[in-house]
Image (cartoon, rainbow, N blue to C red; front, side, top):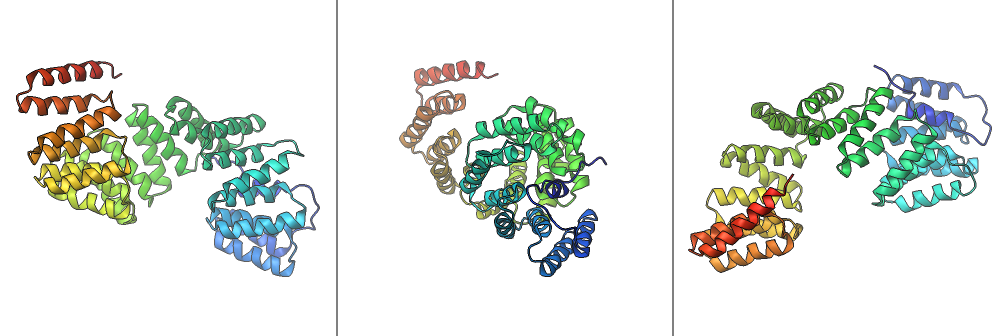
Length: 397
């Protein structure tokens, strides 16, 4: 497989602004271990090198990047901070410290240190890339997109900027642009399962489920024990009407990571669609136990309770859904249905009307209210809601 120079080695060569003695045997050993994919051994070698030469900037830089790879962000932050002090603010240490800061809730600090550097230096692709990441964490996706584009303009062969920009395009539903960036990333580096996973998501939302499935298969071949990717492949199988394969993937994901709530949620939804409510209910309950503030989980739970004539429980679930997402129409639909089943007609109509006030263009709310009106003999009101529902549905593209 084609693989560009690793970010680890790239950031080692990124060391500029000071001189260093030749690397020691322990440092050479650590670099060799890294090339062999032996992260723990590499870390041990560089720690040993630092004992032998406590001011070795090479070892500090290597350890910082290895800690980032191992998601040991606190240690990466601390070793990079020390390297910054000893190197008088060399850019590679700023990059490592900023990346670590983004992961330990210090995004504003990361942005500040990068801006301080850029105030006196020409911007380069790595600084622009990390600054884009800081804006992403701070919730400013548009600024992030701009900076990732600037990073690409500064170095068209730096793959990570394409992946990051693609994920941002994906996040704002600009799937053709995301696909273009994922394709470019994969042309530069074709061994990263995350790239195929995200390109699969873009294909899925771009109404290309077969292409999505192909990318899922590649991602799983590269990362067989990834519950997230397996769950998404299950969703893709489901879209392709291959329910048995979908459930197999959801079950595999749950076995790999028993705390991955989305797998339980997807499995529950699949069982619900096949009207296997008994099997679905414990799965959605497990998803809620893992993530108790996800409105969409309560939507499923409320529906399952409605389908099994447990209207009090359905009402409780619908109220929870509205508590966590008061703007979405689903909570109002299931709450109104529970009230209606309890013969609380006025409460049902009021709930649906509240939902329509918040979502005036959601046609299913009018359809449901029309059904309730018609059931009670209010034909004129029902006809008006049916007409409104048809008008809104006709505008859906």
